[in-house]
Image 1 (cartoon, helix red, strand yellow):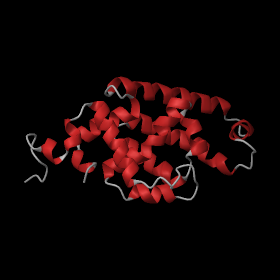
Image 2 (cartoon, rainbow, N blue to C red; image 1 turned 90 degrees about the vertical axis):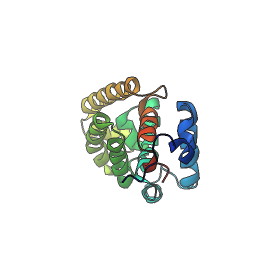
Image 3 (tube, rainbow, N blue to C red; image 1 turned 180 degrees about the vertical axis):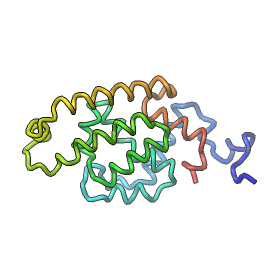
Image 4 (cartoon, one colour; image 1 turned 90 degrees about the horizontal axis):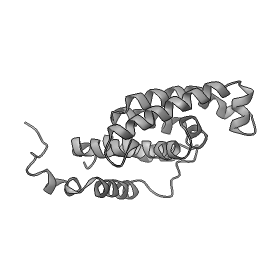
Amino acid sequence: MSILPDDSTKFTVWPALAKDDEGLLEDLFALLTERVPTEVSAYGRDSKISIEIEKLPVGLRAMAATHWLDISMTLDSVCWHFRNFGEPALVDLTEKGLRELGLESLADVFREAGAVMMPLANSGAATWDEAVEKAGLEARVDEIDRRGWDVYEDAKTANTSAGKIYGAWIQYCRRYPDRVFE
């Protein structure tokens, strides 16, 4: 016996699902804003954001954890992401979130980027660029970033009009609303 509503009642149980992709995405952002305190910063190294994200239902947790990666990929690259969002618990939640959302290829590149970038956080270099250069990793970082952009763009074509990671949110929410709105 399923505890999920059948298709005829799911819109009354989860009204956001009756909206178009843009409306659903707006509702998801509003829900995340409501559920994750705005005073907790994802830029910190103190794990506070990870503690808050862990309290969310699995689907909403995946969305909260992958939000900053979508921003990083839009503005720069997968390796750059770790410069701002390299808190270990958040990194772990982001990879798990990508996998939960079905973005396996991006999760694989993300893991590889983390393996290269995370050790550089404690390198003693004045900047991330200096740390990458001192470690002789420029070519490796460029190669990972190129692959990251390739799989990120593939995610865009495979998902809804929202594209990329946010498009995966929409598809996931429509398929598993109970994992988002519980």
